[in-house]
Length: 626
Image 1: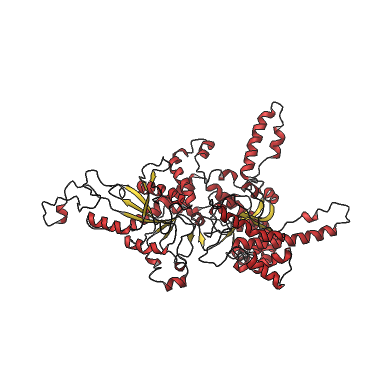
Image 2: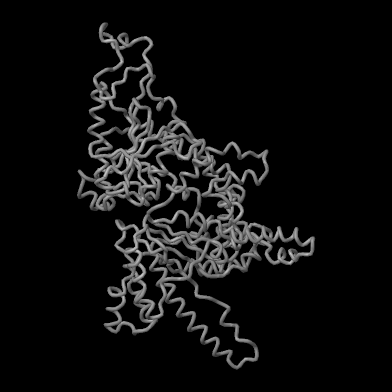
């Protein structure tokens, strides 16, 4: 019996009935057992801390031949970084057959290349030190190798001049900035990959630094190296510039000032209902409190706007105030088009034929039911809206019944407000879509036929502060399979996150754990309703998961996290690549010839020195050659 009691049902294999009965039996005991003893709220990511001291695993060696083999398999957003030892500079090249320099995503490589140059220069000074100014370098590769050719002893070592400067060698590195690696689809799918062995020799590809989402399946790109998403790179650069200011001897407010923009304020807004808006109102109330000493009414406002965090002793009270509904707002993007044949809903293709055949009526319920019928064709975000459309109708029907039951009651009929549709997942329209007005208009027109039947795919805009009043959040993956900003922000909110597990992941996903920091939902969303019902029936467990996520979000704004992430990615990961590269051999002329052959068809777009962290970027950019 004692052994059976110890083998309590775990969340990974939960049973709604059994676990619900257990909750009623011994609440405190289950709460203690739910928290693994090796984890603590103060240190939500021990794996991150441990990885700082683990030597990086080596990569297979590679050279320019591996790079040539890799290039044709990408159709977009793959760049080539080259270290020019003669000029002692880092150069970035683009293949304009795939990427136009005026591409809307060009800013991504602008952000990344400066950080890469500075990190390579700082962490590997002996490797990237250029050539001594006295070295006889021939830029055109005229065959000079710095040796004295007049006297030869026959011994190569003896023939080298005694004071010959150390010569640094070339270095090539592939950089990807796509939401996910922009491989041709036939190189992503295992079956089609086997059909094109000469084109998709993925196991022979050169290493690729991916500043976006990466594949969970390592066999797709064995040499793919996870890096921070491109939009966070500038924040790590800012951190390196200013981390000396983040010292325990200075005040808390001064230390907060140097937190990079990506993570600034997360330690404050984590777990706060109302988020940043609440903090602003709290600061205003503090100011009014000072005025109240001269007759103002700031004391009343201070009482009204008091903030209660879910990590405070009143966390249960705050949790109970949150709106018990799954909420999501976002854009109508595609979803991993190489892996899933799904798309946005099309009224003419998905809805109208079903209504015409008489499968459903020409009304709101018929359109919503037709959306569910098209489930397998829809992206996860459209599937969530299909669930929303049906949930709203069910809620309206049930509310009408409750209102009828209380029509003759003496009390006000407020029972119909005791619940809400279990999910509210809708799209928001953007004012601009990469400056392409025509494409933006097409997206707007897409929703109009649904609106005619009182089915509303577009919801009201909701800020992060608005979302923080809800108990349940979800981070549906977008074009690259993830939504890195959405995941980060929703981990910090006082509600609990239903994390969308897809075939891709982001750099900080290694430091969050299912059922510890979030409740996982599968790619197909087949278990979303079930997980919601579990969370509703297990508020203590759901709140503990939320508190752990809140703690991790606070941790992301700490010196420990930022130092650990920089060491992991911009030191250890780069070291793996630097150690794996085999430089070109031969005379200057031969090396230059290999370089020219390697860069044939590539366009130089920028040069970086990499010596000055305190400049926003020490890179110079070449204008559009066209």
